[in-house]
Image (tube, rainbow, N blue to C red; front, side, top):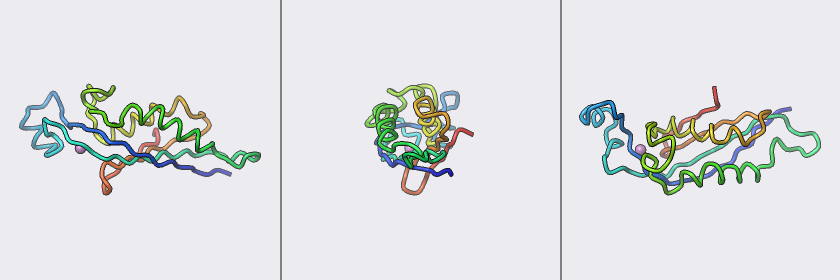
Length: 136
Ligand code: NI
């Protein structure tokens, strides 16, 4: 039998949405306030969901403490209180949209979680707006 377990985390980060190949006018028109050249911040909420078979001995899909530690060590330490565009690869060249941040978090976690388990990243940029990425 399969189940999903999830861990909730938070980080704060600054970013600017901007396409270098576009003019300043086109960027401002497309991204609006998110194109502010002086950056802006978000209180991001992150939910990482791991899905797989329940181990018949332990009753666990995965030790959620290990999941918590993986999120801290591989995600939060890289993003929390950072300027994404200036300090964090791959966002020095990749637009730090919620979509691209969710994909990047998934890519950071995939190598450190058992390949038998599926991973889904849900990233809230605001309480109303969120993105999901599960590797597909
Ligand atoms: Ni923003």
